Length: 105
Image (cartoon, rainbow, N blue to C red; front, side):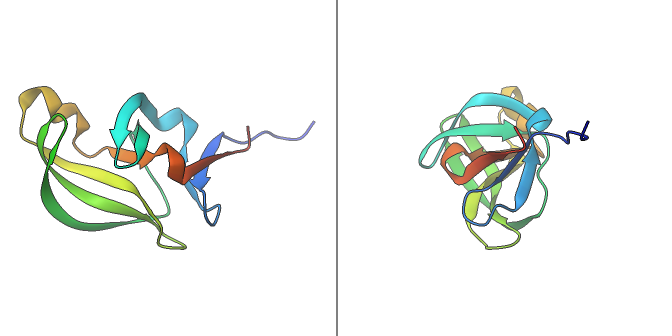
């Protein structure tokens, strides 16, 4: 029997692996263009310049996250949360549901 690897999420444009299904913390987030997932880790990405943004849950310092292969904007990384109740997001990644596809499911 063939070895089955981990379930992955990939960039919808170039199929670059960007995160593991097991790294999903929540599926109830909102991105720029609709639903988004909060991940504990992301891979094969580039992280942009930090900037402060007012999001639905208050002021955060975030950095855009792009596919490491094709450069497509996939979401953002939470660098800093100013509200104590939002601190759990620090260092985590938002990937837009419309920008990622499942692989190896």
